[in-house]
Length: 157
Picture 1 (cartoon, one colour):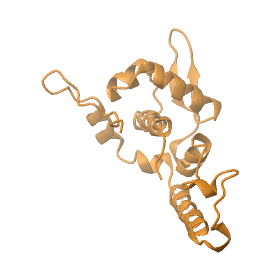
Picture 2 (tube, rainbow, N blue to C red; picture 1 turned 90 degrees about the horizontal axis):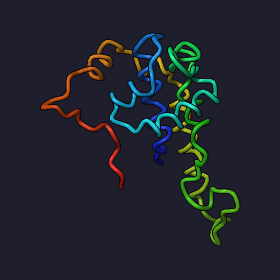
Picture 3 (cartoon, rainbow, N blue to C red; picture 1 turned 90 degrees about the vertical axis):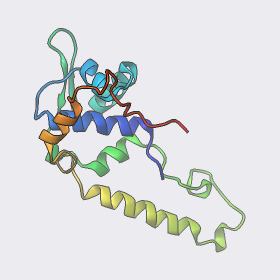
């Protein structure tokens, strides 16, 4: 199972905001720290705001902040709201069928595996991900080595 880049970037935004302890941050600032496109982060912020994870204010003095304390933002909930497909094989999807499905144990096995994956995430909150805020802030704000910040982008396969 692989989470989408949207979910990955969403977690980066949430962790950034949690590590900065309620301080409002701009998309420009977050994009620069993670070396991610501002356009991508605007979409991410819009989605996070629509789902009630962050509050976004436009204009001068605007920015992003968490909508509730990090301990109240469940990781499983974030993943469920942002990911739209947990069908790890075709037969698990809507309308997916296979000629051996009546005798095959793969679909229920993978269903339990996805349930276990989400169950582990349900046991964690944003506070757990940002439990070392000072260390996170230090890493995010470290000066770039030789004028280049190492890219935190996921390599595109």
